[in-house]
Image 1 (cartoon, rainbow, N blue to C red):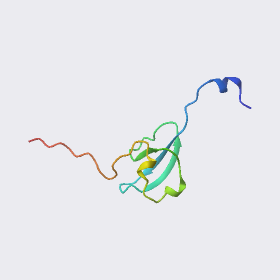
Image 2: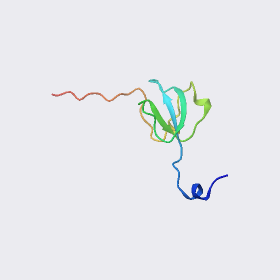
Image 3: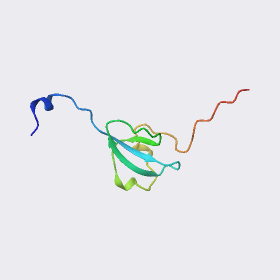
Image 4: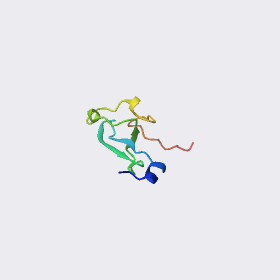
Length: 77
């Protein structure tokens, strides 16, 4: 049974994340309070097991990014 205090205090909600490989294929799903430390995790609106092994739809991502495109170093002239 929940105490009155736990009902009145705000709790951080869990967020959904998907691990993408260089091709944009979903390799893992995770629910956590903070984004995982590895750079290949992206935040998604929800978790769907059918995404595993598939290309993640762009509309699923909270902030879509270009898969496989790494920032290029700026060359001096």
